[in-house]
Image 1 (tube, rainbow, N blue to C red):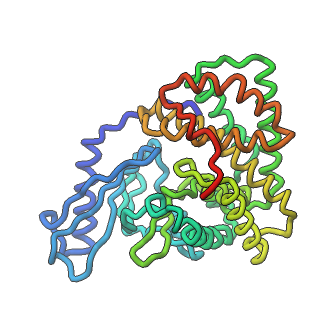
Image 2 (cartoon, rainbow, N blue to C red):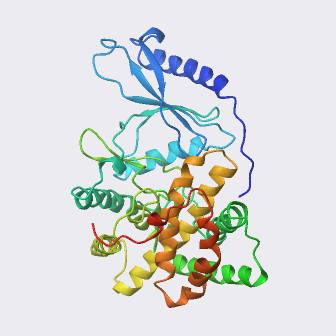
Image 3 (spheres, rainbow, N blue to C red):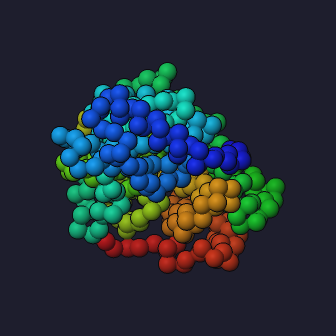
Length: 366
């Protein structure tokens, strides 16, 4: 997980993408000429993909055309997997962008444009419960997708461990500058093992792996569109629910998160996605899966800053660190880890320019 950032000559790729888009439009929509549209750049994501909105001149088409051109460099992005998963998910009732055209060997795509209304921007105290209800219904459809081992890789123990090692390498050692002692290495191995066992004992379903407020879009129809699903795996049933409800970019009171989590668990059990399990077991699965994810996210956000020169994610580290402390301090089996976080890592974090104590502490009311 320590690959160097791959330099891409974006100017050349943008020129090539523009030529390719013109060819696709000429072949499939002959009424549109190069003079009648332009590509407008949108903000990029945590990967190396770039997005450009296709803007067509008024009157060029009898029906509006809403498409995004995507530059996904093949050295870092798997466009073939994206296309295959988009079709698979749409077939099974998940609202993903329709792929209009694709050149997977070059990493060029034309896909349906869901617009700019990210769920994150629509959430506030009055809308949270109904919008999360919509997001949960979309997630139920996703988790009911049938297994396709040839398309969807397994979220197995080695994968879980590789993700956890990102926390050790990039957050602890490289960002905070802490050299782990032998005892601390042993402590982490013990905690990693507990989290992996909890993940693998859960029922396994399709996992989006980044199901949160920046990857859900409120479409003009009011339906929720799902994007950024190309890393989907077959794995633990609580991974996507905790990604949604303990979002790295927006935080809700613990009691509301628990209420929403149990509501989703009950729905999943009612329709047969999950077998009937007791509340204590389900919440432990949910909490410990979230802990695994948030340790990984601490490492990924640190790596985005240090390796990929994307410092904006540093602002979200305190919120994610708050989740890690909240969960680890709530379970006796994780108390040694929680004490180490408080005694060793937290003092180092407070010395960082990105640290904000208010974002680390819990909030108790909606």
